[in-house]
Image (cartoon, rainbow, N blue to C red; front, side, top):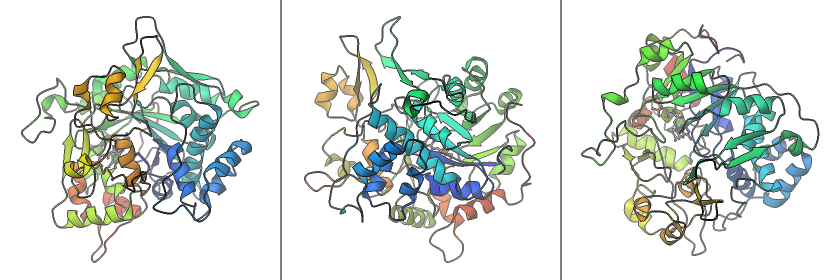
Length: 487
Ligand SMILES: Cc1cc2nc3c(=O)[nH]c(=O)nc-3n(C[C@H](O)[C@H](O)[C@H](O)COP(=O)(O)O)c2cc1C
C-alpha cells in the first residue's frame, strides 16, 4: 500500500505479540495495511532479549533508537547471549505506573519504536499500531515510540478513545501530552492523569513528526458519530467490529441474560446500521468474520472501504503465535473440531473474550484450577480511588484476598483468568514459576477459526500471510479505494 492510499485489507492488531513486526511487515510489503499490536510491547521486548535475540534484529533496531543510553541500558539489563534456559524464569520488569520511572518510560518508548521500526523495514508501505483504550498507563510513551519510528496509522478500540486524536497532534508537534485516567470511585472534581513530555524524554528539542492517521474501533454508529463530533482531534476513519471477531468483544446492548451455552446473547440491537455508518462520510472497514472468500466484496457493497481481518492472520506462518499451537488449531479446523467460546467473565477487563477450546491451555477449567493466583504483569489492573484520595491498582484475577483488601468485590473475582500471563505463553514466552510450573497459553480467535484450514494449499500444514491476502483479494479490484482519509 502506498503511504497515502487507504487499504482494502487491514490486518487487525492482535495482542499481545500475535500481530508482531514480522506479520505486519509481511502484510504491508504485500500492499495492504499491516498492524502491530501495541499491547505489552515493553514486556515482550525484555523477553525476546532474554531469549537471546537470535537474529540480532532487536539489538539492530535498538541501535537506531534516538536515546542511545536507554538502548544500552535495556540491552545491558535483559540481553542473555544464547538465550535463557527453558526451565529458567524470565527476569521481571517494572510494573506500569501512572508516572513511570525513567527506565520504565524508556522501555515503553523503545519497545514501540523497535516494533514499528522492524515492521517498516524493507518496503515503503504504511504500518499501523493497535492499542486498547482500557489499558491507559503505557499509551503515551507507546504512541511516542511508534511515532518516532514513523507509524502511519493508530487504531484504538476497547473503550471510547476520545482523547487519542488530540494526543497524536500534540506528540507530533513535540508538545507534552496528558491522558486522563479512569479511576473507579473518583469523586467529583478529582482528576487523575498520566503525562509524557517528548522534550524531557529526548533531553533536547523534539523533532516534528508525521501525525499518524487515527482509526477508532467501534461497535455502533452512534459511537462513531459521537467520536466524529466530540473527539479531541481528527478521526480519520473507523473499524466497525461485530461480535464474531476474535479477541475482546463489546458486551451485548441492554445486558440481556446469557444464552443457553453460557455465552453473551447478541441480538438485533447489536447489528450496526451500515447506512448510518456510510452517512457519516468517513471511511470504514468491517471486522468480524470477513476473512473469507467473498467477505471483501460484501463489505465494499455495503459502502465500506474494506475489511479488517484477524483470525485468518493469527494462524499464518508470520504471526507471533506459538508454532505448535498454530499447527494444532489449523489441524482441528481441518477436521471440523475448532471451536471458540465467548467467555463472559474470563477477562479482567469485564468485556467478553473469545477463547479457543484447546487442551493444555487456560480454556481448560481443570488445568487452570491448578494455577496459584498471582498478578505480576499487571497490564489489565484497573485504577480505584483509595481512602487517602490517591489511585490504587487492582485486578479481579489477582489473589482474591489482595483484591478484597483493596476494596474489590468478591463476585468480580469469580471465573477471572490471568490473561496477561496466558497471552505471553501463547506467543512462546511463558513464565516459569518457582515450583517449576509453566504458565499455560490463553488462545483467543474469532468464530472464523473453524475455517482457517481453508487457507491451506493441498498437502500443506501451514500458510503464509500472502496466501491469505491472495484469497481475500481474489476477484476484487485491487486498485486503491477512492475513499480518502478525512473525506
Ligand atoms: C488472536 C487475536 C487477538 C486480538 N487482539 C486484539 C487486540 O489486542 N486489540 C484489538 O483491537 N483487536 C484485537 N483482535 C481483533 C482483530 O484486530 C480483528 O478486529 C478481528 O480479529 C476481526 O475479526 P476476525 O477475527 O473474524 O477476522 C484480536 C483478534 C485475534 C484473532
